[in-house]
Image (cartoon, rainbow, N blue to C red; front, side, top):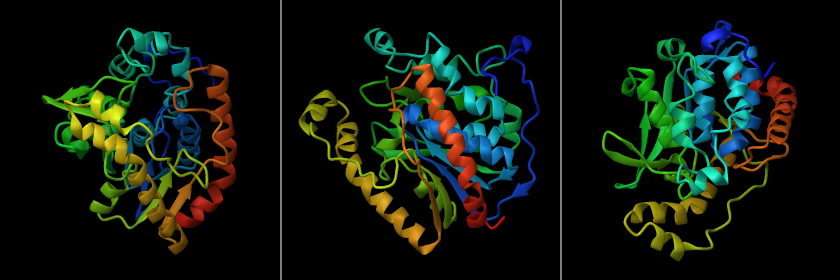
Length: 310
């Protein structure tokens, strides 16, 4: 699909991907991982091309980008939200970090690219009209709790955008986001270590398709600088402890998911190989990651369909 959009004023150039098959009882969960989400965005494209509709879709951090694009069923934006981002001079980099905008300029990315006429216009009417349950997770810095927002919390596009920004704001690298006066950072700081599987379970889902950005065998190493984080976040001790505890939380959640996979209640979609890191902003590497993701997604779709029972 072309990386250019020849439609004036940023208007949608096509209708949402049609729904031909409704999944009954499986939650679709997207892991975060910054630009590693490029690889798994390709799976979103393949699921949309297959006409699949999930009754529950949720994600954390970059996983929330894949979540909202899946729900709005926008094939063009699914790719461009990652690949096209690398061509935006305001997207970020170390210059942005030095200017205190964040390594990823989240205020620009999440609040100034999604409206009509902007770089990646979002189909809010389709998103808001969905019958699916939607969950976007973020970490509340003052209380140390994971907060999940749903459609009931969002009446307008302007309610969605800061919540996606908050979910995706990596500590140290990106600024804290305030919503209704409360401070938030990346949802991966929560008790699961980065998976919205607890929200899916709380909503009654026992079967899950979990889309990961780490390959088979990955385990998150222990944090080597706990003292540095405690000093850096001395005014937000819950953030420091969440960073320090994240590897153990992540690995514990992953072990539970792998047990669910063995028992047949979980399908773990994991990259054959992850060719980019979370901060990658070079176009050639990002587009290559997307193309590699398409190859795997198309190859694996029959196995996913079998798990879904469709």
